[in-house]
Image 1 (cartoon, rainbow, N blue to C red):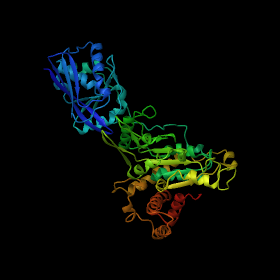
Image 2: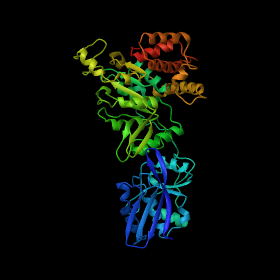
Image 3: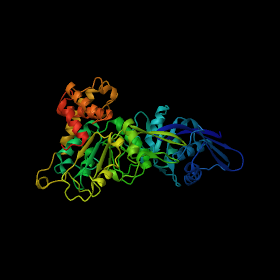
Length: 506
């Protein structure tokens, strides 16, 4: 038999498509033809597959070899098809039984000596394979930890081509021990106990973690803005299995497991430099569309320090994902949608010199310079920020105290308890956090008390807040009510939420 087929997966963003790989070996001049819209990396698979076969003492057919990847209209990229092409070629050369490989998905890049190297996008590939009815998948051993996040499909990790061939021909293979999902802090040295003073900023961080509200911290250098932002993940609850799978899938596409474990249940934190580009922030690319920082922070925290220093348009590119919870990137090869449900934390100095405070002490900036500096944060973006907190310089009294502040563990207990209250309230709804309550629901079953709504309507009539601002304040007031144990937001909760949004010092 000179015709054989097997399967692999092509990815377009997070969306995977099962690809049928057909290999035909026919008489004629020795040649290798690859069909199905391959990119440069895939076109080079011929030399990798040939060298791997020869170095594993297998026979390379000295005939005309035609490899077809279908559906033919779907663009294929990357080196993850190497193993599948190699197995199909051997089956067409009648050294592997065709019925053994027909229902198996093969993923992996081949080295010249036959080793199977790690690839990107294993988890979303397995998700697509499971949806297509595949129940067995061969993956690189280096990707086994990530692949185990996928339930309901048999994962067979392999390190070398010889191991794959032995399993296909004899059914014998080494069984890898399963790995357990563990909740391990990303950095055990980070704790809110390290933050001196700053009760207002600490409370704002707790509110943000509880309800998923966006936060802006404004204060001079050295006041603790970065310390507070970096410690927000330590007070967030651990991810559910479904959330962890989403996070791992996005990071698998981006190839960013050097800084994050594939099986981690800790909420991610992404801190792009303020010189980052729009493509790096929201995602993109010419041949391979990769997720940006806002997608890598999905179900976690996106922290941007020195926010006014960002190039024009970078922060404004976050306006759409802040509202939608996802980002759609349109390119010539197609449209790709990545999840982007993140908690945005911005940090900014009050002026270019950074020394401006309510008393204006030691500041050399003019009022025009201050307005121009903070004006780099556009009005539409600021309207999407739930809380704007002023962070004062740390005083002598705070630094002289020997006792540490409240730890992340105790704060996290309150966050988990308040989220449990919200989860019970939203048990029949499609959302989980207070920040996700739709506007229609805020005007119906999730209204605050009457006097609190009258206060907000007065502020709206005076044009002190916008309609979006009114909804933001109500959502924040629900979080404050959950933290204080109130069944509904009262006037005190709403006024406190209004003050947090207006930037009034707590």
